[in-house]
Amino acid sequence: MLMLLAFLVCPFFQKAWVETIDPDGGFRVMTPCEMQSHVQPQSTVLGALMYHTWWCQGEEDDPNTLYMVSWCEYPPGSLDGDSLDIRSELLQVTMEAATDNLRGTLMYAADAELEGHLGKQWRIDYNDGQAVMKSKAFFIGDRFLLIQVAASRERHLNPEADRFFDSLRLLDK
View (cartoon, rainbow, N blue to C red):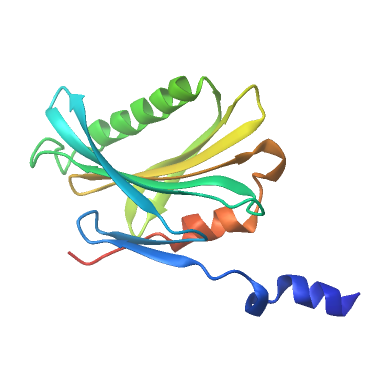
């Protein structure tokens, strides 16, 4: 029995993860699948923002159905560097919009931190409670950075999701 357990948890037998580096977005992240990217303009009160999204779908044996990192750069000076209120309000609006878009329920929200940058983390249950989206969002200067993972409710507590979130690192710009 112990030999079987060692086989199941030994990193040697685990599938290799892939590193994605986005120099423009200023980050790197690890995923169990090759990420694809897409850029789409978003209309805002500040004008059109280019919204960059990296994503991949978990394979059949993966407990997560989706891994995603998104970012956009706000115009210089539009987010006063000394004003946490503007950033906090934008994070709150982001959580509410995500909840509405998924037609879900916000289950929790808390403060988060990434290499000294404050942000928020939250969980939304959606699809009549059968699916879970976990998110963390940060402002790095004028850049907004969002990392998310989706899974079924039965499988949302898994080490792969933690590994994905924990792998996010900022690049020196």
